[in-house]
View 1 (cartoon, rainbow, N blue to C red):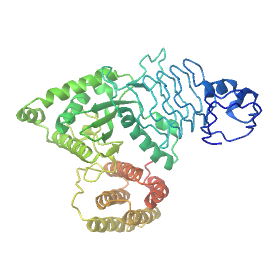
View 2: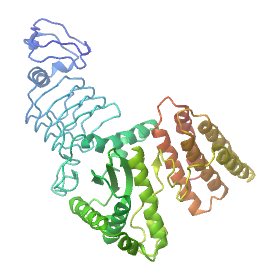
View 3: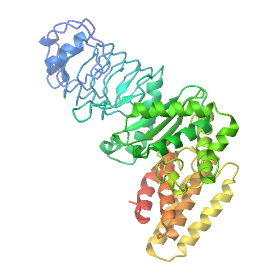
View 4: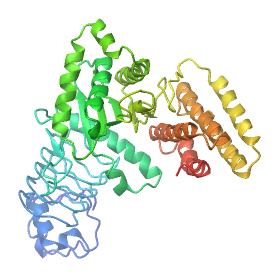
Length: 461
């Protein structure tokens, strides 16, 4: 009876025992309590009342099994759904404002045009199939407040800011994209949830890439205790860009967000000569800023998404070591620096890169050790899978091949720490590349099989 409609029906003596009642509409149905419904969610009288009147304002549904219920347009303001199962439910147009969705399961749930302003979504379970189109949300809380942690981790971080139309979907989409990758890799999502304690910086107008890059660098230097690490950059169309940075839990995110935008606006207003003066004397700093500047420009023009950036400014700067990681991106990143180097893939012939990869693998085979031989075989398989993947553009193939070359070079010199770090970044880029491909793509299947084995052989676990 999936999607069946019993609106205002009289259901005394109806027999629904063990029936499949996914998204079945019971709104204003009468005498449902006189029906037979063993083995369904209707056994719970609280759930039965909820699906017929759709009024749950301020009520407690913690831990309840609500899988597949139809609560379209329901009043669920201030409701408690902590640990509840809402998988496959229809919550289209429901008002969940200020609701507690902590650890609730919403896999394949329809939240289209739902209201989520002020909701608490700590460790909620969503999937790439969860529908979030048109969600109305001015702000969200990523945690419940506790006596030890009174800051409930508001998004947007700056309390004077709110999400505008579609901003919430833009905020949550990269997390869902990343989840899609993790599901393929069989990663424990409870661990993944811990990585999204972040500072999110939204540019809704025409962003100046250089000013943004300098402002990020400056706040990382002024607040080293924040441990600022840029982990995602996303172009959202119409000159909109979102930076996502991982920071220390104890940092005041609202204050840091306000500080960033104040610096950004100040730098943006400076004459070009004054901006150059800010960079004078440190060529490496200028290079890193140019690298991030290029990433921002590419994100704006192509609406690309990059996740888990790992280039450490501190490794090449003479001061403020270890404060911020910017560059070395994961994702579909044609034309962007990768594997810890300022490499430009644009215009490089795929055949030329393929030849260089073959040579590097050949040199690895000449090491004549069981590990090197096995690694070379796996890299040859990966090279072939990339070359024959129809879903990858030539420039993306070239970039992916460059990562294979990096892995081969790391295999030749396992004692070289710089190469080992480059190999880690190369693996992240390859994982990001397949994250943008359909599940049926052969390269996805190959990477899921090959990358864990390559990681083990390179001792990068």
